[in-house]
Image (cartoon, rainbow, N blue to C red; front, top):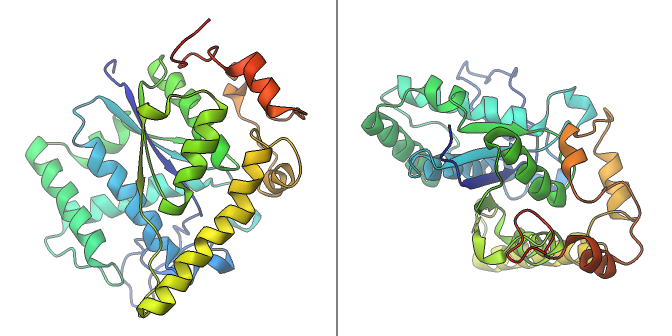
Amino acid sequence: MCREVELILVPCHSIWKSSIPFGDGTLNLGQSPDYWHLAPFQYEGNDHLAFIKHGLTAIKILLQKADSAVVIFSGSQTKKEAGVISEAQSYYFLFERLIRYVMCNDDINIPNFDDEIHYLLEDIKCSLITQKIDVDELFYGGSITTEEFSLDSFDNLIYSIYRFEEITKKFPQKITIIGFAFKMSRFINCHARAIDYPQSNITYIGIDPEPMNYNQTQLLKYYNDLIQMEHENALSLFSSDWYATKDRLLTKKKSRNPFKRTASYTKNVLFNGSTWIEDDKKYFETNIKCKMPWSLQQK
């Protein structure tokens, strides 16, 4: 493959439990929160369904790109209780199983999936049939892959860029990120800026969690709380710690690495994320600005 110019990035947020069967014998397609290693805060909004929408949207976009893009699921082995399977691997295997199921069945009315997921599945099925692409070709042909070392959203972006280069031998000219809408500012205004990736070359598609059976007042409070937590736990921290080399961000990253994984391709990164950076702005001006392979104006 030599035409890929676009990275379609799906930051992962959990690990799918592939071995758990459905109680009534139905195939485990990720439709229940019981099929995921979820944090307590991920239940209220049915986050697991948003994860599925993120991945399906990425694959839908991929099928519109005519071999010019690569989907990368990004996330490390973050859960000790899940063993050594990574978030990215679990997403990859889930979507392979889900799409294979859809292609083999006329009735794809899967319990617990909402209309949006069913529409995405129908769209993907139609595209595969029209383009005469089978599931093996879709998943084993090199257009869908994983990045398995990321421990936070900054890693999701920079590691996936280098993973893209590892696969295609060039850096992405464009990036499409499919993730939570409330995290858009973090990716665009913090992470892309910190690595000097042109913001004009990034498209962010936001799909947020959706609590069930909430009235408008409850929904408003839920989404306002999400925005507030994003500011307190991420935006404000990355604004003062661009590269996540200090507490609290570094401590959080270490807690997500129970198996002590280190990315092999970090040797290519022009900064060492494990080294404490005293002055992020000065570091950026000296080492990053106009010097990255994707910088608009390289010195």
